[in-house]
Amino acid sequence: MTQTAFDEINYWSEVKLEIVRRYAEEYSKILSAQKRPALHHIYIDAFAGGGIHISKASGEFVPGSPLNALLIKHPFKEYHLIDLDSKKADSLREIVGNRPDVTIYEGDCNALLLDKVFPRAKWEDYRRALCLLDPYGLHLNWEVIFTAGQMRSIEIFLNFPIADMNRNVLRRDMKKVDPGQVARMNAFWGDESWREVAYDKTADLFGYEEKVRNEVMVKAFQDRLKNSADFEYVPDPMPMRNSKGSVVYYLFFASHNRIGEDIVTYIFRKYRNKGAL
Image 1 (tube, rainbow, N blue to C red):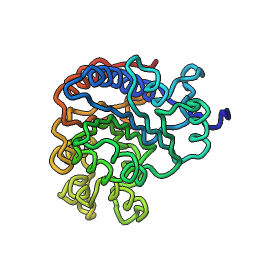
Image 2: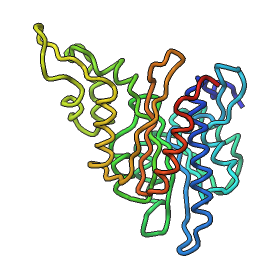
Image 3: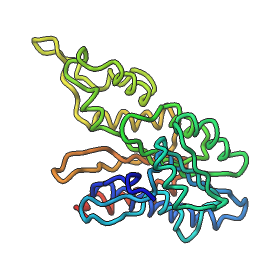
């Protein structure tokens, strides 16, 4: 196993891993116990990584989200793990071994989820799925989020990468933004309606528009998850902060299950003010 497959992670990523692990435990416990009808539940990790991380705080190895899901007490029926990086995919294969309930994919999750993975979680087939969408930045297409919402059988955790947006797209002068970055933003948001949200329409003397606060962008995307993707339950997301208190990203949860919302709201509240590990 090559250590180059392992990412160094900050404490907020460790908190995120713990949040997802706690919910996956509860989710799988509940669905495993349901008998009438019996449900076939699936775990999906779209940016799975190498399976293990290295804590920047302690220097110790930290289990990644796929390993956490594989080790829960009430296992899922299937696991689908995706990463674009061949070294990370190879690391996953080495860690997982030949488990018949695990499928590892090397490639772009935007295509793989729609073509191969989501079709295995159809509502009418009594199948359900928990899907972690944790991109490294604006590397996820709205079509994936929208499809999950329309299927009604898939719950998602979603990294809303506000720091990437602020750094590369939401500039005071949009004329200076790389068109490629704008295209990434359009793909993540699903269209160009983010432009109407992101800027105060009252221009200053120089013709610039003021960028709105992060919370305005977050609220607009929360509404989009509900009204465009049709997720029924989207609790307020968890702000993931660095050691200086700045928000790096927001962790969204979206579902068609009220019990899921209640559990995640409780977990978010427990970890919202958690300090460095």
